[in-house]
Image (cartoon, rainbow, N blue to C red):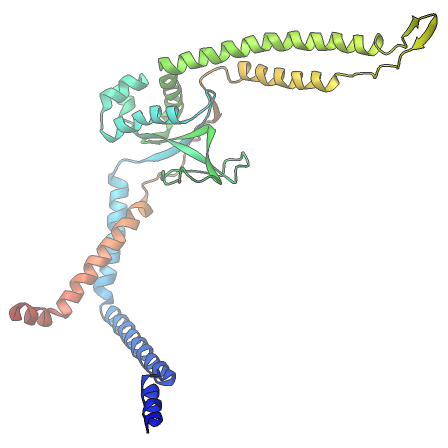
Length: 328
């Protein structure tokens, strides 16, 4: 009697998997039917109200072209500079002072910083400096972090320290050459950067003198090793002649070549990269404006279409909304 009761209790406590899967299937079926019904209702609703929705799209596109032809044109171009001082952090922060002046519409400060007239400065919309990102640390720039979203703790994709990008937004692209010279002049006017660059050039000059001395000394030492120290020496000890082992010839070509490579690097730094920065890629004159019709359409079309759709939904359900409003 007790065994039968225990078996009944065990069966009642067990989970019926078939019933569980059946309920889950019924629930999913209800969800899919509700989703399909909602999709069908939405499609029918949009089809029946195609005229006001189409008018909203036409108005949005028309407004986009209206803004295109009534607003000032905007062009962008990029300048790539090589940083000859070592790290980019200070230079990028320093150049982004110009971005701050542009954001604050401080034309007088921007004019003083760049050495341009107020009329020329009014042509500039923005100046910003950005990092180059090197994927997998292969020394090749892969992209520019225009959004400033790169993770600084990423050890695989790193910020490049030998170059950076300057993007300029301007109304008239004919002034890009003048802006390039003004940006470089703005960098060269900083006293700290000037002192660091003078110290760098002086150290390179001292290193170049030492390298020339070492190359001459190695060349002379090589001749001595090759022509004089490879002879057989003999020494008389106690009336006997002792032949010493022939000394191995020591050629110093590799050492000399290493010094020449270092000398060539120092020469290039003093000749090609003697300034604080070096232009790697100059501004290119853009032919297509940034704020064209598509630029404004990406913003106006969703706004017009969304507001029209919301208004149509409110009109279609105004009775239910009034009932709920009156009820509460």
